[in-house]
Length: 114
Image 1: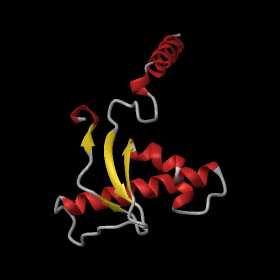
Image 2: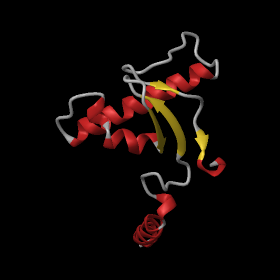
Image 3: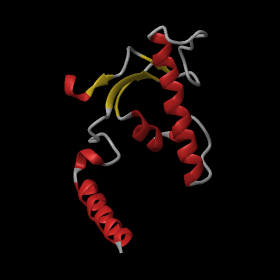
């Protein structure tokens, strides 16, 4: 009985959280950061919430076969740019400054700074 009550409360809490834009995936997420990235042709792109952008643009980095592949590629893109940011902060023993020809301009910023 106690478990059922908790489960019902958890469902209510989840639906309430998902109704708030800042709790959902995408650029509106409360913890989303602003990234400025450079594509292999040298064009700058300003991205809010790199993971969400990577999900939508995974095809630019890899051939996508399934939704699971898209999530894997998006995770790899996010990790790649994360390693570049760590390098820029001097926190990697062997620094990296590009991911599949893409580069990062400065460190990511908080949306609140914009």
